Length: 385
Figure 1 (cartoon, rainbow, N blue to C red):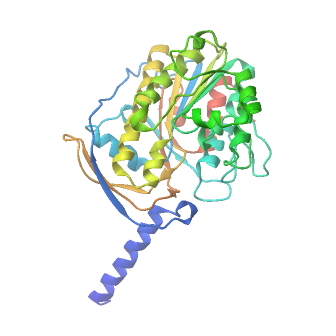
Figure 2: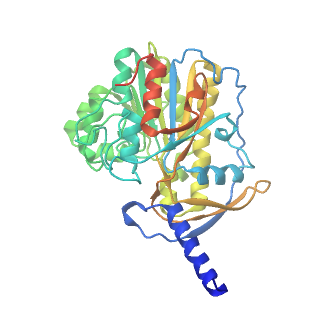
Figure 3: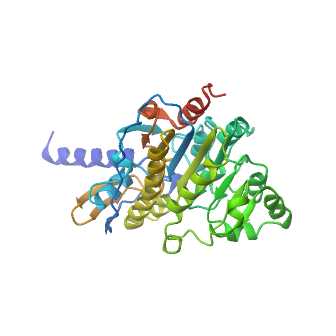
């Protein structure tokens, strides 16, 4: 083969590999490489003692933290920008999660969120329903009757696909009024997300139904928080520049609230939703910033688990976004750079980290639906439905 042909063959091979790595973009968005870099302010990290990690002690509480769109590229970029450390990467147990939807090799948040919430794979766009659009019980609906208090926290709207997967049953993630109506009938004891404006724009009937089911507050300092049995906390904003420490602080608030109200224990899902949004925009610095903020919530959960001794913490993602690859980094300076291969989702596996009793059961490769089934089995001792 001539040198000219060899060069041409190599170029074609590189292009094919790039398309394979990036996967099929969500909504057929154009695949176009975009590079970025950032200098991050280091926030440190937390390393637990590991004294109960991987033990066979009884698990009372499970905290599932989902970084929306957080693939291994985002984790690496945030880690190196933070001096080479994150709380999640300080943990000893790690695995991978396959994220495919039932009808598409590249999932969306609704299908993957539903798999995490119910243990069932479904179609893209479906929330809490199977492939035939029949409602499937989610973890709160399975656990609440057994004495577990359940909650969700997110930097998205509460009707966003991932939090909604844990209380709603709709064949479309866009069915906003219907999703909110499902909240009133849900098994949640605690819910919080950036949804005050959306809530106020609901019909009076839906707002009244929700207010009858939950104590609705707009500040964690509201005196009604203490005496409530079910709480809906709606901050004014969860945009990064305005929310401050909302995600770690509300994670702490939810853990304490649920621990006081669950006879058997609690289940909490916490979502860092805006990692994905920054990746869709190919904003490298924004992706790093949101992943670091998510890691603060991870730290809050790990510290709680360390004190409690009977809490299992699982950290993963619903899917990867942007097909992010790492470029040059300098952990000493907080500098990281990388490249996005697309503005959509990719089908690559996402990382999973775990800490606490029974954490080793989440090592290796697993389906997102298996994570849900394992949580139910560990809490109840019963096989998933």
